[in-house]
Image (cartoon, rainbow, N blue to C red; front, side, top):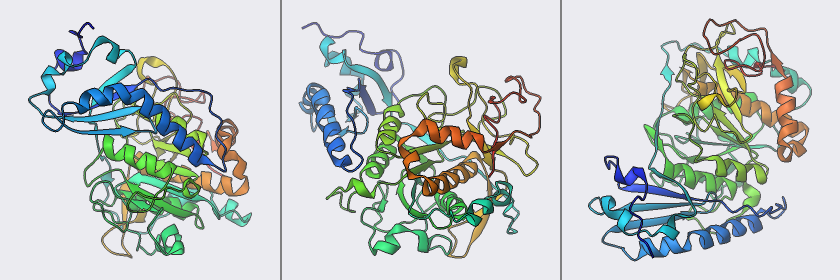
Length: 428
């Protein structure tokens, strides 16, 4: 068998700065129809096809444990193999893999770090302008408050004892953190937050959908989110387990996952995760990113071609926030973001105490407004979770396009959807 002499440029022509790499294999789609009442069969199916697909590569790397290969981890939610190498071995890996090993590898990338980027404001007054701007009380008056809807976030964690959040935490109702919380970073057994970002985000979601319940996974540490923890969070939320990782029960999966993280452009490594969330009735909502005001700054995964909600931020005067990432996507493939929500000077729960609040700006703060809105819509019609195009059409019809015109060159801001506001700013 001919050895691969030109393995991939990432190993041959770049300076090696990491000893952890992900091998993304071609995902095998066999038109599996998910039974909503038995999602665990789908999870087992995913485990089986990824195990078979990764088998040869796994065995080859396993030959070099524990000296040259320190750790190997397989992910079933996406066909990914995480390999931690000895730093002295990594530059020689192309002599190990043979040509046949490369046939199904579609991507190889280093451990990614998405650094948290938001603005902590000095103002501390209780201003719920965003809540009022989207006119959520209109839905409340109709009796829709998020009852029986489970929202989740992948973030820095949540201070679950906070006065705004404690009674809505599903673990409080169940009397256990099993199936309701995962901490891949610090292995805390109760929901905590060392940054504040996740607590603030969840507080906004629950302010909009005041009777929804929440669960969470700490996919982000104090300063950044990494590939490993994001994938572990993604798998846990699709099919939650006990704290020790045993006894998976997919019936405890959430209806909505808020993702106020991201970075870079044109990176599709998370797309298979999103597809599999959608297949089991989980609605993905992503922050557009805080890389504006230039065009083409929409972050990944928010720029995904897969069906998601990509959320931009507006201020109290309905201007697009200066920091809010703009479209189009890389190579001008499509318009993004999809929809805007209030994201400047947003007042929500904080981590200093169970009664503390902070005012923050970012698309991270806009995104949970949309997650909360979707929770209200699902309470009204739960079948929408399995009909994303219909949900999209409904959400995109609930907007105002009476927004401030911009002066950038990303295309017209008066023709909707556009690369500033998407379809418009959400409102009931």
